[in-house]
Image (cartoon, rainbow, N blue to C red; front, side, top):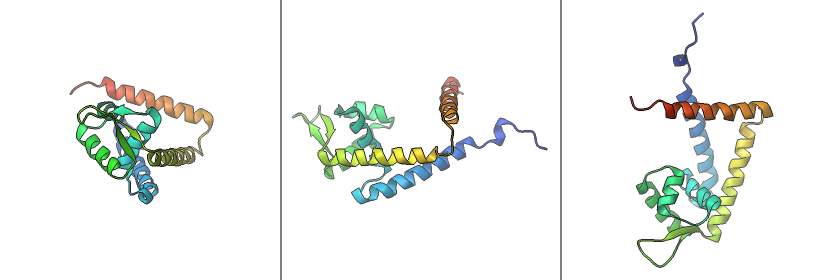
Length: 146
């Protein structure tokens, strides 16, 4: 029998497969709004935190500035978000009513999908899963530069 080691587990592949599947179902759900998972997190963060500037939105999502610029421009063109303020250089953005409806619909959809993903877990297993993920992320952050 082969001895199990850390390198026998392809955790990265499992996480990527889960993420890819979630992005695919998000794309299907959002397609009726001519949006993709790329747009969803901008809507979700504006829905959750309210009006904010581009820098804060970029930092909340954890992407680069160019992605935020593209997504915001696209979402503005489609009427989901709007600028707040008169300055061309300094302004906040917020959801329009149309954007709030899509963001709430997306939130409800993701909540349902996540609930379904954990339907075979006991409450203790769910708690343990999130505690283990937290430890995993802390461990990744502790590695430092190689």
